[in-house]
Picture 1 (tube, rainbow, N blue to C red):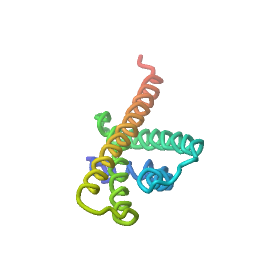
Picture 2 (cartoon, one colour):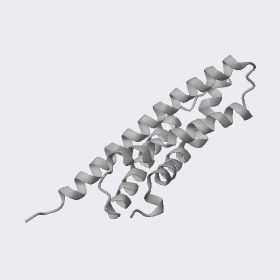
Picture 3 (cartoon, rainbow, N blue to C red):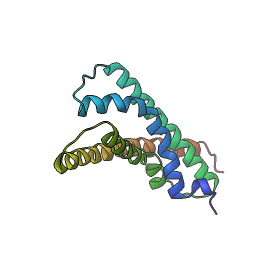
Length: 151
């Protein structure tokens, strides 16, 4: 029996909060530059935020995989992917909030184009975060089981 925080829907939602939270402030500036025709000029800071996002995804994935292994659940592959990939769901929710609160789009077609582009961006964000999570969990699993001496 898995604890409540290790069950898949809950762990997916909990695992995506930290990676999304690490880039939340920067997303406002990026989306303002993308959709409100403002100039984005902080490329060095964007690189730092990208590195922080990668480190956060790695840490979340390793901790959630460790908790899953402690609960004797060895099926970690897809869970480690979705624990971090759920940050894309939060990104899509943020983009819906941005649409309602910041954008003044008139008509159905601009809203459809915006939602389509943001769903593609959210999917790419999910794939990036999920792949970092799987690779770091794989490295973690190989490290802990490679250190075992079987006689």
